[in-house]
Structure formats: C-alpha cells, structure tokens
Image (cartoon, rainbow, N blue to C red; front, side, top):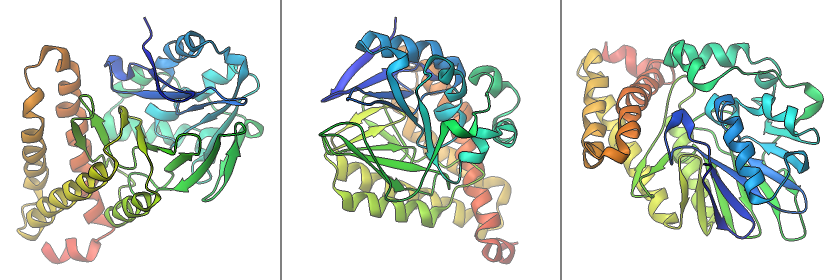
Length: 316
C-alpha cells in the first residue's frame, strides 16, 4: 500500500520506502498543468513511486519532468527506469551531475566505495540516461509548470557539489534535498548529512545562509516530509554542524586521528537515544547507527584531510 499525502496545494508527498524504511524517503509530485517529480528515489523504489503517481490520479506518461536535487542514488538512481514509463519526461539535474547520469559508472563506484557492494542490491541497477532526455540546470534557471507555479533553481553545494534546491512560487516552499540535512520522526529530529566524497563545511554553511535569506514558508525534505519550522531548522543545522566540526577538529589537533570518528559517533549516538528501542523506528535507528553515522564521520574526516590539508598535516 503506497502512502501519499497532499502537503501543500497541488504538491503530494509519496513515501518511496527508501531502504524499506517507512517515512525516510520523500518523492514529491507537483500536479500542475505540466507535471513534475522532485527526486525519484532509487530503482528499488520505482514501483512504489509509479503507484503513488497513479494514486494521485496522474498517469506516468503525463509527467513532464523528473527533477533530481542531486545525483546520489537514493535521489536519482531510479530515473533511468522511470523514463521507460514516462516517455515525455525530461530529467532535470545540476549541470555538474549531468554527465554522471549519462554514464553512471563512476557514480555507482563512488556509492560502493562509500557503502560497500551491498548498497547496489538495496538501491537497484542504475540505467544510463540518453543525453537528449537530460536538461542541465544552473543557478537562477526557472521552469514554469503552470500559471501559478514557477520553479526557481538555487545552487546549493556543501552536502554535494551537484546539489540543487528548488523554490516553488505557488506556496512559497523550498525543496531542499539534503542541503540542510535529515528531518526525521515527524520533523522532531534534525541531523546534518555530510558523506564523502564532496562534503565541504564552508560551502554547506554558506548554502544555509543563502537559503535562510529566501525566507521560504516551508521546507520540503528529501528525508523526510515537510517542516514549517523554517528558521528554527536553519539555525539548528548551523549549530549542529559547528558542534560536530569542533569534535573532529579537536580530535585531529590532539593527534587522535583514529578516535575522531568514534567521538563524532558518540555525540550523534546520544542524539539518537530517544528513538532507540522504539519498535516502529527500529529499521530507521539501525540505518542511522550502522550506515548514516559512519558516512558522516568519514565525510567530515575526509574534508579535513583534503580541504584543510595544511591543518591536518600540521596536526600530524
């Protein structure tokens, strides 16, 4: 049974059951004159997404755009398969990510390097997308879906260099992908997300500042759902990033390289304690502790090793 929810006027959230976890992956359907999906989930979520589109009353062949906030496989991996069911659709993607959807080999290799070969079994095969079905987007580009709905694209690096945020004019909301982080447990838990290889703290914080100035009415998270606590979320994301960075920087300064990940995981593990033991959140808790936390630690440490190489070498 597919779960959908009308979260704003003509905007529907489809729970794509990412990694078979409920309320973890959001795909948004904009049911305008020209219809669009914001993110599409991985290939293993394709049937769920198609069922959600039909449940809204839209036929897959009427979808004009599959817009991916960035090219990570949990957001864009299913696009190639979905195109088979959406013959009119164009895939809209950040210009830095377009080539990796045409030839996804390095994208798949990057995912397996970060999460192991088993991640492809969880996310499914990634099909290449023909170049003529791609539309590369730059900062400031727009797409009109209808009289009252224009999508405005914002370059939003930090989580990834190929991240886009999308402002929608009908409701004044902002699709944020992973640019702010994860908003979980009915928007009661906000966690920054910075996996390797592209995390950049300065860019991440700068993106948060730029998005804050847009003053959107609501935030549409890819993980998961919609929050009206807009300014609170922006500030909380900034505060947590700084706390986590202080932990990693202090460990490196103390030559405790091997301990840096453990310290960060200890900090975030304490934040996850309220959901530990909650049966309905068991699969989410396991993913966060076993996959998410190690990825965040690895991404932050890699950032210091590369972006702050001089600082890192001085500590050694």
